[in-house]
Length: 558
Image (cartoon, rainbow, N blue to C red; front, side, top):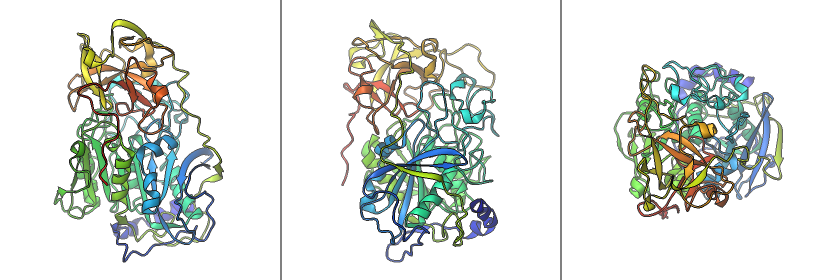
């Protein structure tokens, strides 16, 4: 594996010279990849789906090559990694990166995670990164005992032996064999970068990584392991599992985006509403027990200032540059576990605006600082471009129907009044009457109080401790089902013992809109929306009466 060996051999030099610098169109000198001069295997001006294998495992990705692409003119390359459960096509629609490819002149790629989980309740597309398959870690289990979920164990993990069952992604190799650490770097994503360099005319100094949720977790890990390659990264509402934080050995500019209402992978506290421990953004940037921090890697002078954007103030959006160089930026907005403003236009703008400001002149191709002419580097095998997307559409037919309607039932519209055992909870861009759940007396020593319901695991159905009676119209063929999470008017709902039940609904649409078929699974006039659950293929049923935000995209500044 020449690619891996080259990284090891060049390690010392990389630490000193693999700098990212500001892009200047007037002075920039592109470095052409080995694919320059070759005819593109992908149709230009249209997103297409391709597959290839790495170590015998078949992977899928979507790619958009701009209309103006020329086989002798190097172009930047951006990879956006989907969240847990998200297909590449749905992610492409929701994240908004591809929408800027023609205007800004870059190749947009959306890899698809692995779904080797045979349990019901998927899709299970996922990335093995930053400790998601390695519990317990240096700081202990990566979830509470109440979050134990055997259905999250993937086939490639050969039986998850952690107790409690905290591992929740594939074990197939995406960047290292374990998904963490810096040894034996390889896997699907480095192989994909190599493949694209060999097929297309790419400016190797302008290769970038981005992703949301589990894809944001993957993005942080890629920044560590591909520091000599990536000019910048843009993780959206991602993190490291607790105890697995790392920082790159050379500068990699980073912009982090989190919603202030995100309790799924929170930015400011470690414990999520569904019982998983993450690393706060402050610790990722400043460092701590397990990492020296990204500010240190980026030679930050700690001179913080406002990072101005055209969206400043919209839904409380605000960005802070942690360093005068602008290479470590943190952004926040008044939203949940979702793309910026729930809008592909806004999210795509933020990601591309930051990434394309940077270049890494030291990267000559295939992850190295010297030109590689040997064709024995790792690339994907059995490459195929498909006429149609071979990814099956999301289907939830394997979920049983558990809800029934009742007069005075639960999960209703707050405008019509909630039952005495419910609170009004904001979910998605709306609100819902959510049944309150108490905590177990006693509990596990050393852990926060556990709820009297099965956290997060919507497969539990009738056995998870949530009410099954829904208020509203008759439910026909509904596969919405209760799911128990820590959620409420607090940024730390688990520790604050704010447990509620929401209705998980199958999200079958593209991007933020789960689609009419998904809305039909919800009671009354509720809509199915992403933004409250870790599995991004699942939405929650929420209402948009008085006091709720509009479901529509916000007005976008030109």
